[in-house]
Length: 345
Image (cartoon, rainbow, N blue to C red; front, side, top):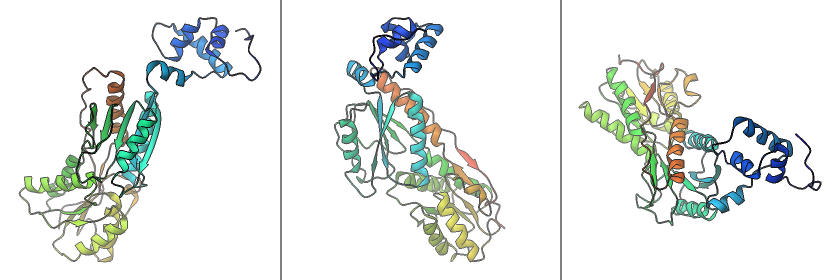
């Protein structure tokens, strides 16, 4: 390659500079930078090498103006450090990066009824090409929110909260996963299964309660009174203190691993052994679940797979607005059986 002439010191490199250094036309540089077909591998390598040598970056703003797209995707998510929402957001971030789009995130706060609509408006003002709603809480009491949605929307793990022209949905199948967890305990021989539920404003907590209830009904078993927590280990401990008062309790399905761990602490303090006296199943498969005593049987959530599959649907809707949505299969239910469950004595 030959040195580039005619460019002042400190000036930002342009596509014409890359073309001159690579010995190709400016149109060819544009094709390579836009990852278009009909460019030979040799030419593509020369252009990319020239771009790297010059420190050239394609002008995304100009491209957005020409195409009507910003190549960005917005995400509305709950501002929380809880394992499930945080892990799903990380999965979304990885999936968006793989699509070549930029990511813009707006966090909502629990208790703000207008938080989702306001977050969506903020993202639309920034000119995103599509929006991901990863909002686990029903702040609107089941009502459909109004928003000026004119871009495709992906809703993860909850009913669509908006009436929009292009909505695709993907979800962790919490109902089926909770049912599998409950059926595992029933198949071990337990007469019934108690449930330590999450807060019922959360869609996922409702789904897990419904899955537990459906499993008991399908097997003709009695449905005990539900004990409700707030996802924390402390609430699991408090719920466990309530459950140990009943000597008939032999199996408990907790709506997340943190509450299951708190429950096991309460059982141990009361002299109820796990799993000899009480079997416990959690939900999530958090990193610590395999290292508590005893290791916790739980249901693993496929956060990365759901995010990748959902983003594939969304990008298809963005880039092919007139075509039919892509089909999406439910992710498999993965029950991780460890030492916290056994047949009743």
